[in-house]
Image (cartoon, rainbow, N blue to C red):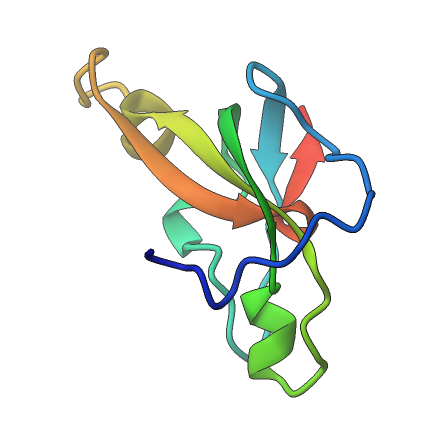
Length: 104
């Protein structure tokens, strides 16, 4: 299945967030790789689902090891990302790890 090689067994660490939790994507500016898109940085969203524990791609790409953590699907309203001109019915779902998110 898709992503199977990167999913890890649950290490017993509870997820930081659950579906329905409001979060804000961190406004980070790393010099290396990140899976947190610029358009989502500093924006507010809602946890849609917890995919389980996965290798944290940002750390792994820098040779820092897998740094396993929960991966979430976060729903961002289009207006939060693109402003008042965006449709109120549209949203963007972005898969983000614990280290990308703070409670809103």
